[in-house]
Amino acid sequence: MALLDHLGITVDDLERGRAQFHPVLTALGYQSGGEDDHSISWHHGEETEIILYTWDEESGPHRHGRVGWQHMAFGVPSRAEVDRLHALALDAGWTAVREPKEYPRYSDRYYASFVEDADGIRIEFMYNPPRESA
Image (cartoon, rainbow, N blue to C red; front, top):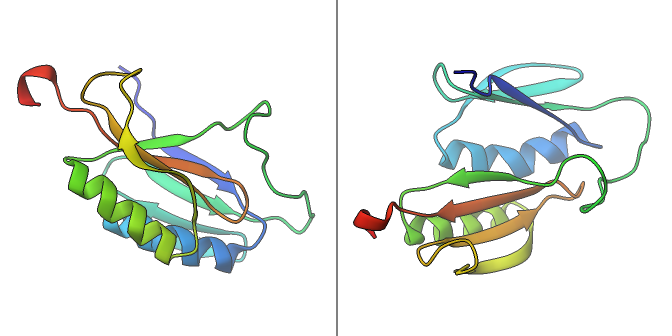
C-alpha cells in the first residue's frame, strides 16, 4: 500500500512559516530536519516528512475553497489533545477558523478544530476514536 511520503507546502515568508509550523509540528511529534535558503523540513521518524518552501516570486496567500489545497488533518489521541494543539497553534500565530467542537455530521465521536496560518494554509486537529473505544 502506498503511503504519503512527504508533503511540500509553499509559504510566502519562510521564517514566519517556521515560527508558525515549528511549535505545532513538534507538539505532534515531528523533529526538525534539514533546511536551506528555500526550505525547512520536519520528519516523524521514518514516516511522513513535511517541507515548507518559499520562492522569490510573490504569489499571494492561498485562498481556501479554490482548486488546490483544502486542508490537512492530524488525528490525535484525545479531545484534550485537540484543545491543547488548538491553543498552541493560536499562541504560534495561527488564526482559529473553527474552535474545538463536535462534528456529528462526520460521526457521533468526531471532535475537531481548524486553524489557518498567515498564508491561508489550513490544518485540522481531530479526534475520532473507533466506536468501541469512544
